[in-house]
Image (cartoon, helix red, strand yellow):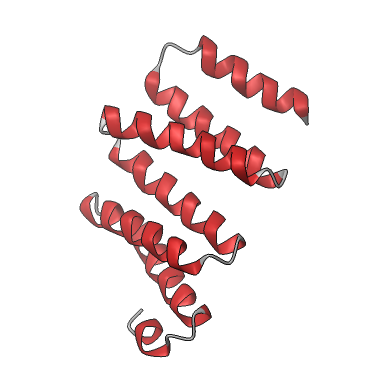
Length: 124
């Protein structure tokens, strides 16, 4: 598995395309999350987010916020998950991505339900 991680790091350093780098950072972050290396996940996904904000790659921002929300769910930090799903939902609303917008809304409902905030959960 370390070979996969070093391959991603090599590709990131070699890439001259910033949009490709965002995608590689996202994939690398996914690998870290799959390995249970949550700190490395957040470090890497934040690099992707910073680059996507700098480039105004709004679609990538939505995907990144969605992935961060899912990571917080796995940590049972539903408040942080809610915050990130709201960001993602707003991005997907702007770009008219109904599928991902609906996904985020469903996750928001699930998070509120996990916090026993049934009234808010019912809104979603």
